[in-house]
Structures are given as C-alpha cells and as structure tokens.
Amino acid sequence: MSNVLHEKLANLYEEVIRRNAGEREFHQAVHEVLDSLGPVVAKHPEYADTAVIRRLCEPERQIIFRVPWVDDAGVVQINRGFRVEFNSALGPFKGGLRFHPSVYLGIVKFLGFEQIFKNSLTGLPIGGGKGGSDFDPKGRSDGEIMRFCQSFMTELYRHLGEYTDVPAGDIGVGTREIGFLFGQYKRITNRYESGVLTGKGLTWGGSQVRTEATGYGTVFFIDEMLRAKGESFEGKRVLVSGSGNVAIYAIEKIHQLGGTVVGCSDSSGHVLDEKGIDVDVLREVKEVRRGRISDYVELRAGGASFIADNSIWDLGCDIAVPCATQNELTGAHAAALIRSGCKVVAEGANMPCTPEAVKLFNEAGVLFAPGKAANAGGVATSALEMQQNASRDSWTFEETEERLAEIMRRIHDRCLSTAEEYGQPGNYAFGANIAGFIRVADAMSALGLV
Ligand code: NDP
Image (cartoon, rainbow, N blue to C red):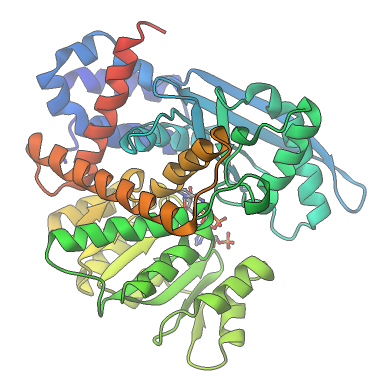
C-alpha cells in the first residue's frame, strides 16, 4: 500500500484529524482504510461525490455517560461509559464492549470504525458499533464486577434492542460480565429479549462455539492462507500473544491442526514452552483462577519459563498471531520476526500491528491478514447467535463450527479475489478494506442521505 492518499481522500483525512482531535487510534484506523480506497474512488468517483466515505467516517450516534458504583470498601467509584453507534446501513449496530483502563473515545471509535468493515465482510446483516468503559476489572471481586455492570446497563439499556444495537464482549468482558449486563437489562425492561446481547451462556440463550469463535476463526483463516500456498500448520512453530479469550482458543485450534504454539503472554510478560502451550493449564490460570501468566510456569511443572523483559516476538517463529491489543507489534518486533524466518502474520486482535510493522511485512513478502478479516469469526458467530435467538433454535457444536469455518473461507476468498481485481494480488489488507467498503457503501447509497 502507498502512504500517499488519493487527492479526494487526503482532504477527508485532514478533516477527520481536525474534527476528532487527539484520537490517535481512530486516525490510524481511518488512514489504513483510506489508504486502500484510492483505486475504488478512481473507478467509482460517485462514492466520493456523494460523500459516502465522509459519512462513513462520522458515527451515526455517540453516547458518553457516567457510571457510578460502590466498591467492596463502601467507596463510591465513578467511571465513564461509551457506546459509539457507527453505522447501521447493513443491520443493527453490532460490536463488543471493552472494560480496560486505557479506554477513551478514540479507542472506542477506532474499534467501531473497524467493526463496520469487518461486519460487512462477513456477508451477514450487521452494522458496526463498539463500546466500553475505563473501568479496570483486574483484582475486582465478583460483587464489584456485578455492581459495575448493573450501573453501566442502567444507562445503556435505553439505547439497545435486538433491531437497534446488540453489544457483545471484548477485552475484560466475557460470559460473566455479559450475564450481569443481560440480567440488569431483563430486570429494567421486563423483557427476556435474548437477541439484545451476544456471548451469553449456553443455558440462557448463548450459542455453541461463540466462546471459541474469534480464536478458532482466526486459525481457520490462517489455514486458508496456508492452503492457498500449498502448505499447512503441520510442524509449524507458532507464537500467540495475549492469553485471554482470543488467544486461548487460537492456541487450542492451532494444536488441533498440527502446529505448535511455543509462547503466549499477558501485560506482565510472556512464557516460553517448547513442548507446546498446555491449553488446560492456561485455561486453569486465566479462566478459573483469573491469575497472571507467570502462574502457568508453576502449574505446568517443568520445561516452561517466564520472561518479564523483552518481547514475545523475539522468540522466533514460522507464524505469528497477535491476540492481545492494539499496536502491540511494532516495526522493531516485525524486523525480529522477519529475521527469524516468520512467513505468516494474522491479527487475532484489532489493529495489533503498527503501520510500520505492516509495511515491513509487505516488503518482506510475509503473508499478512488484517484483524478485520482474520478475527471476524467472533462477530460472525454472534450473528449466528442472533439468528438462533430469533428462531428460538439452537444448533450443535459441530454444525455451528462448520458454519464458522465456511464463513471464514468465504471472507478469505473475498479478500483475495478483491485484492486481485483491484491490482494488488495477495494483499489481504487491501482486499479486506475494499470488499468491506463496497458492500456497506452500496447499502448506504441505496438508503439515501441518512
Ligand atoms: P481478554 O480480555 O480475554 O484478553 C486480553 C489479553 O490480552 C489478556 O491476556 C491481556 O493481558 C492481554 N493484553 C492486554 N493488553 C496487553 C499488552 N499491552 N501487552 C500484552 N498483553 C496484553 O480479551 P480478548 O481475548 O477478548 O481480546 C483480545 C483482542 O482481540 C482485542 O484486541 C479484541 O478487541 C480482539 N477481539 C476480540 C473478540 C472477541 O470475541 N472477544 C472479537 C474480535 C476481536 P492482561 O490480562 O495482563 O491485561
């Protein structure tokens, strides 16, 4: 990709920076998409002329609210809640909630913007949105988490609905938090409206495979990339950053397909386990004990080591799967990966690779899958959950997993064929941006100036 924007898009980008001052991650996400749209604007000037792209960069609605709650010591805490309803041309706003101290409007907008194109790429009827809070769940008791979630939903509920806006989980929001949020929604509205949240537990309206979907989907996507090159996971050395929902199930599926994940991480450091990360031990540490990654070494009993300094990407691999957070993989990390012989990088997280890292991967011929394509399996399975809720049906694990695999195959093929059609064969990021854009832009054009 170039770094010089098409003239019609350069002005728009300046406007985005001016109108959204200080929102660095949002600027980065917009630039990354605009960078791919030059050939589209050249071929279809009507998109620029009818301001479709300008409208896409402006959320339909942004909600910011106070979240007061009382901690276990009886002290009043105040957090800030966000929901950015970015685009509903293809369906109700859909996208997760993130609870992390780093959350501010710029993060929520970058995630919501990415979500528009990701959801479009799935081919399913879902618009794009995202939300969250600067609340830090680390070290909080179940009671504190519940009181926070109840207060958060006490404001948010009025903006939600199965045909309006349907949140799910993201960093810091898993089945436990979705349960507390759903319980409060149900209590306030007096409606058992299953389709208003996804990522629910299996006994109260959730879908099989939703927990595994983002990690599994990312690995299905990589498997397609390897297949297109006549290769497979068999015998490959893999690194996965993070050790949360996406990372755990990416590791599980990679092992099922014959690869070996030798390292994973959290914000305190990473572990190296040359025999392959033991997923049962990792789940015990992260899902049951809610502990730190260093606890893995203790429980694994021999062979694994914990490294607090340096980066996980210095360990060297054939395939790298960043599954933690935005901008975690820098240019220096990319250079180290390339030197170690890494041939494939797929984003399980949203925007984990910096623009400099992506540029280096492209120059070195490393196959690169952007998050909006590779991690779309989570939201796609959320849409399957909505489908099951609407028809009061529930499918088996096998049936749901097969649907997920088929969706990931289609996204992969759509990225490749679009990249080829617009003159950059093999460039998944370019293909994902254009294919995602065209579907939503056509819907916006059809719906008139709204
Ligand atoms: P979790 O909260 O389950 O896990 C996040 C993991 O990333 C934790 O291990 C966390 O460590 C780690 N992490 C966070 N910040 C850093 C950091 N600066 N350095 C190293 N590790 C870090 O979140 P998810 O697994 O759900 O989400 C991970 C990524 O995947 C996010 O980018 C999210 O937006 C994206 N994603 C998630 C989807 C989903 O369905 N859940 C769908 C699509 C994308 P620690 O505990 O120390 O903070």
